[in-house]
Length: 160
Length: 160
DNA sequence: TATTGTTATACTCTATAACTATA
DNA sequence: TATAGTTATAGAGTATAACAATA
Image: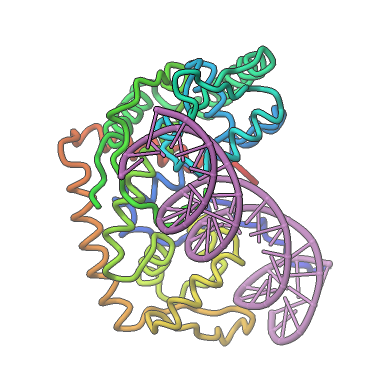
């Protein structure tokens, strides 16, 4: 059977596609790296039935009891309307509570429940472990420099 | 990650929100930094009526004449179906052409038109200038380390 | 049978305007 | 009037299944 060996499908590495122009384009690399991290994170959080946004919100609420939704939206860098469904979900699952603020009855103070704190602890441990595994082989200095650079970029006002 | 041209907005400053747990969480910083870069990029590309995806596709086609859609999708790390509308748009604007491959009539070879190449050149110049401006003040070494780290992460088997 | 490009579809994230109830 | 949270909606990115034409 002269069947030409079903050539091993080219995964990732094979592309002889030149990205010469994009090589120095930070956004390009940032997106690709983020895709990998995001995919890994999604897998890691799946057993906890959390996504990146619900995970981030939960962690911030656990770390900042009494946080208000507007503060949380600001911290997460998302718009208020988009936070509502996230908080809805966490509340429905009884991981957090929405408590009226006596001094300002417009606002809600967010608190994690015991269940929420326990889930958060487990999720944080899993994420940390997975991330360490993902970064295995990269030099510590390189990672430190990368995070430092990204923190500086985070603070840029963004022109517009 | 769905990214409809986010508008640049000032983040940080206010929050006395503790992100102690997230501080070491790479995905968190990656997302925030990417948001800033993406917002800046969207602004930069607006005059050319391009988005990050159409820009990236155009650059890769200009740099790789005859590229096929499946190769391009692979290079851009997106699924084939999602590339179709991007190519449709570039073709409709007469920035590229879809040419049948004689030796494999299933495939299309993608070529940039003169208009496409000209637009690409201008867009690349603008993006480079804007990105340099965005990164102004960051040390060269830091940026180099960051890109090097991200390139390594890109290659990780994050998903299928 | 497998692959290229395509259609259809569904889900997630995002952005804006407008509403309500408070302040 | 201004703000906190909400609703509704629209746009953009992503992932999967299934199809026709071709290999």
